Image (cartoon, rainbow over all chains, first blue to last red; front, side, top):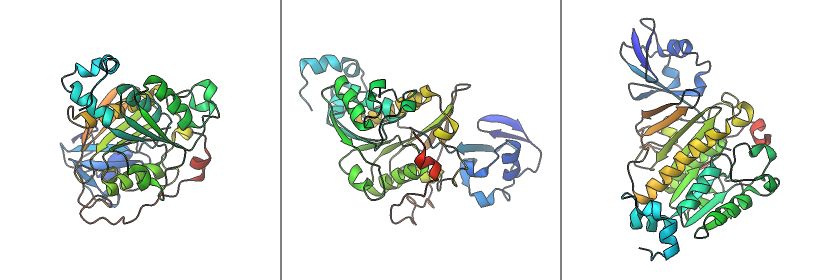
Length: 68
Length: 271
């Protein structure tokens, strides 16, 4: 199925859940990101149970803690 | 409205001819009070541009002294400033750029016990801090004190920012619920940062500050603006204020300010 991940179209396996997508996108550590699916935040403990649907927009928002 | 001197009309002429700024906007800038937390990579361009723009009162907070490893990106500090307090070094340059500006130095760490007092006299706060403990503290304090502020963060070749109007728009905790576990996300001292990235993001934060004061355009609220300079991709992801946000939501669970414990490597690292 096709998803839009961080603004780009990607092909992923049908039936993938959010944990699977994070792994497929090489986000090694889920603690590094906040995730929105179709503009709604998903709690970290829901990643495994969040089934992705074709055409959904997924955004990974990364922590950036630097400034000095 | 302020009565401008001939010299001020000339100094600010490129602002005054902008229809979004004009004499009214410049007058607002000269009467504005902005606090910059951190006189480092982000604080440097923010302080330089806000001073040049004629922001009338600028407070700057930093406990550190200038280190040789700062000079690759903290462009407000010069080689001769090594070992000088950063706030003194910064204030010196800001006053040299623009004698109209009243610079107030706060040579201390912003912590849970002093941050509300620090924020109180200012209209707008700019986060130029370098660790998650302080970034979350700045957010929480701005929400509690209802101070509009600019969040900024950088790492390696990337940067992110959002502007927050507490009670109206999404706050940092709406996006990032709590600080990441220690060492799950590297800091700049661990991972590095390209010097000019601090300039890119800091000038974006300075722009938001000037827009807030003058009322020009639309602020980057309810969105996280991020870029990756390796391919010069810029993105703006829309966000919403979260009803279940622990600090700005309908039923806040954070009732007093505290700093998250930071890993020792962050505290000891030279910034």
